[in-house]
Image (cartoon, rainbow, N blue to C red; front, side):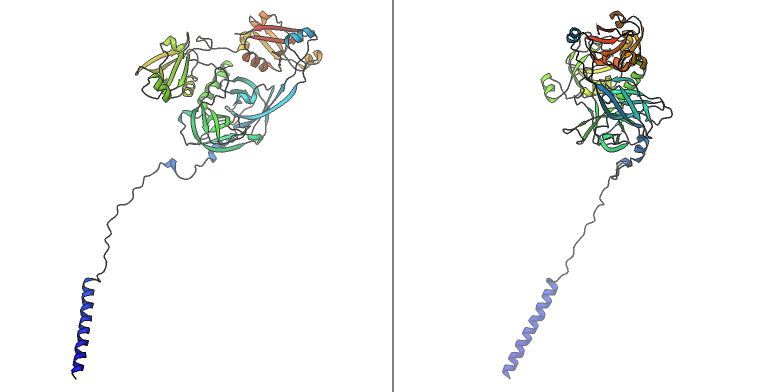
Length: 478
């Protein structure tokens, strides 16, 4: 009995201990975890401009607006060739070697600028061509006349006899922004009516590819695909306006490798106007030797900032010297527009003609000075430069088929009138047929104009009179 009481007491103690343990655990250790969530401020979002949407722009309007105004240009030229005078001593003296002429063909693109058929292209597309054919997007074909060419900007102006043609209007290349979408329209690899798209990658790019003495390079750089045959084609903005003429690519293989370059329409417009009115471009010169301002140049010359265009020298009797500019000046702006590279400065000055007064702001010893500069031509005066052929004082026409048969010649131009000028002074007579200039065959008047314009120093003119008498003349050009 005593043992039962003992076990009962033990059991009750164990049971009470168990209840006590459960109460202690539930009261002190088994509380529910509470997580406090602090109030979060909403994330701020910035509204992007409407024209910066993530989706690609719609370029269909620009393509449709430009495709019919870009033409295919096919050229033919005769390379080599020559004739013997019949006098071996004469031939040996002038180095004349009879050669079989070779027919060369080329192709490129052009842009119609007016409904009556003025077309701009690259000079290298039509250079030395005796025959130029223009093929419209509608497949109609026209013979084109060369109005004039400007090697310094690699541009040329053609004319076809047609009406109511589709044409492009000028845009504003000054307003182009990096990253802006553009289209390149042309005829690469003879594939007509081709459109590619890209963005503006850089502006005022100077590549050093134009070797002309008065060359101007201020290219628009894009990544729109351009290849052989695109030369002379259109670079258009999203509104379908002309902003440049596609001219070159950067490539080690001769095909597109990611970069293409176009002459800006700011240059194109001026060149076209001059070729229409004067027959050649009226190039205005500031009369300075310039260099880009770099960090090393700024340190060497003690310039306070890397900005503007450095004047390395001013030419004797040039426009800049006459106005008071000096070597060491830093040109900051031209006609109120800032310039920060040689290419930008050349492009801005190229918009003017000889005799124009232009405000030039320079920095000299830290101070800004403004000069009014009267720009001059390549001869050092302010006169408009006229076509060289007019200066020579002669009129011409392409030789007729009867003369070709009677004289057994294949080409030439006939002198139809002579006034005071170099040809008259050299002894030419009306009726003389010019077949070669500096041993280059002359098929039409534009060939003669080109050879005279490109000549330096003496000129050798060869040809034949209607009675079959061979003759040659030598004279100089300024």
